[in-house]
Image 1 (cartoon, rainbow, N blue to C red):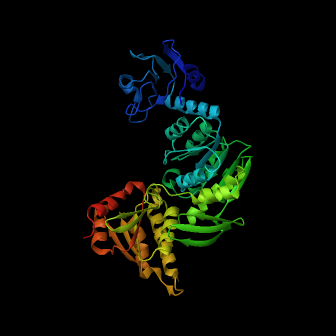
Image 2: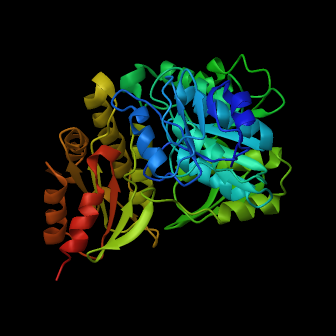
Length: 460
């Protein structure tokens, strides 16, 4: 999207320090590495960087002007805007464009499942609307601005993912996005180390309704805490729950289920994926979509990178779900995997940002999985078998080792490793190539290193 001087003044109250008098239209760039000729450079600032140090470099690369918080004017600039805070200016410009194009705006937050839900909602809404979405998981203030400013002029539906690490962040995003509809996927223990309690997490997620339009709706996972912290929102509230779902069929890469007397399909397994899809269904109907459109949209959904991503490495079938992890998502994804795959091998790593209770939360995952394994299940012949006779767990890291300690108490096979390379070497030397390996850990564990090692040192 291109702007002129008057639009920038209107959008963010900028003071024009220099103007050559030319009626120019320009894009906005915050990165000198990707800036294009004719852009205006908007330098962002943080604790460890100051984009204003690179203004001259931006001009050398073809920028026609820049934003600044000082009065300094560089030679070669056709237009210079002075603002008090460049990030606030960026957000205000994004809000200006959001209002100008005025798409149906959907904001999505939650402790887990945000990005998956965003992709499912996009897949559904695209059946009826020209839809634009947050790229990958770019869900902070800068990501919001990038998403809005890259929106085509004919966008009818805008989907913005909202992440947070503390109080006030979701409220800020909601203020500048001005959502028509909001989705809260859940309120679990992710970031509990920063926020201190499940109440505080639910309260922070519920900030999304602060600027939610009253003629829109909140679509949220049934949760007592979310009920409490969204009570002041006077618009419509739609609650969904996996308890309202009848699962008709689940197998590798496929789910079929009934929700509110209608049948749907997904090309992915897992009850948590089904639960994520419920908000897309509810929103689709709220926006006047037909059952056929919603059903087709869900069937068209495919997971994105590092979220239940199937690949082959070194002769092993890998399911990579290692982009992020918290106790709820680890319990849900691992229990799905071990129930659907023969001879499952599970590689678990540390979960981050769990605070002072991190050891107990890791142990809790182990206890939950031990109970699942001990329960057994009917195999495809109808005979009962016990999963702890077939599943193998490999853990990486001192915290993941606590998961393994609980599994060992249930007579489950567990090996712990200090690093990814040691775990990968063990797989190469001891695991049959016909097994399917599931990877789950927080992003900081860099489990892609396991895949890379297997690929480079495949079994002979």
